[in-house]
Length: 344
Image (cartoon, rainbow, N blue to C red; front, side, top):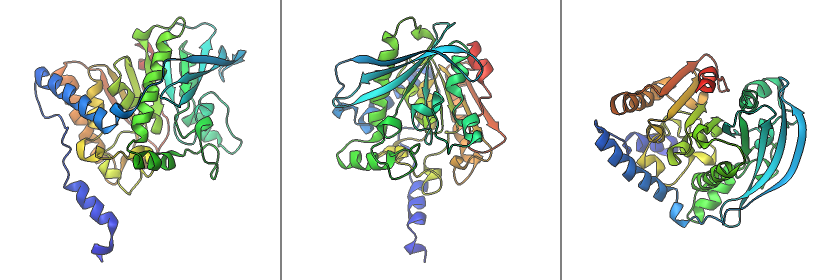
């Protein structure tokens, strides 16, 4: 009966496939050469060569003055549209605190947040209080610390959701990725190009200090935050919550959304690779002990990846800019590093 089981077959393929881009060196010279070659290979996998950026253009559509955050921070919220790829434009909420400190923060939403709306407090009635508290708080957390916070809609979510068969806060990553892959593209590549253009927009925004740019994301937002930081050195600090695990250990187990699937990705690398590419910049990662996204082996596979990343930070760069924490609980935003994060 095993020969009838496609899951067993795929798991065998996963076990037999060693990521060809994994870093195995011991010196800074080896790492720098690996970084250059690996970034070039990743850009090929993401089809960057086929993706055409639109001329830079941004336009403000709305501005609401004198809003208050859940803890009483006075701010204004602007809605901007930023042209990204040819034929695409991304809506971005910008939350500007009344007593800001010129630090910019890019907050990336998860699935189930109704895109950027969930991060700025526009939520549907059927979202539970628990989801409001733990999943959608980090944009306001940063706002209340004086950051100017940028919240874009990722393609397939929020205002960019093409299908309406499910709950409105759900994402349509799988449908979009299937179409893109059939055309020779993939959703992760499109998303990274769009987010790099959002960073261009942040760099042009009035009164922000790009030397302080941070990026935070939970779940799929953590996925996008980690990859963006790997591909764009303008991100100085990245905080990933609820998304750091072996890609192959989640195959047909816990990650079914299309944003996790890129042709040839799993044969080339695992999640340690984008994390290493962030080094020596600040990288904070948290996960729940019982988070289902950890995969079929639970934390065992996560610790292996963490150890490889930590060796790069310590042995290659001789710095302690990588922090990892296991929290007691399931798949949710914890924010255990936020006090340290804000102090940087």
